[in-house]
Length: 179
Image (cartoon, rainbow, N blue to C red):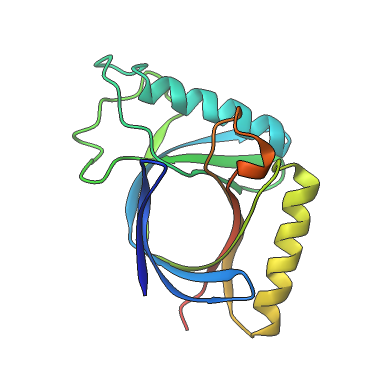
């Protein structure tokens, strides 16, 4: 197993790679704390709005005016019809009690539980049609192996909007049920 700790100097949620098959990684994630916001609208609008709300918080838009370290990836997941949850992982060692309270009441701190995930990485612009195709392909891979799905798809975005498409790291994932 391989443990991964950072991407381009930014902290990642702790995970171990169990195995790699057909460009799919089976990962075991440790629990971690995240700040999240639920945004209504289409996927592209929700990621942009959610990112801005959370970025404002970590860049000092909080009760202490204190900056919080940027981490990756920015996570997006569907939350019912036309609602999306956008998350930033909080730095390791943080707790809801030690982080500055958000000025924006839409931001919530949540503990993301440990999980096993099937993850496929891809480059390029993460447009909705691309994410749908990647989700379908990964879902087919999972089904062909009889793996039980608990949640997904989950979308992970690692790079700034200024990163050239061929240098971008994006991922689609499904949380697998305990088996």
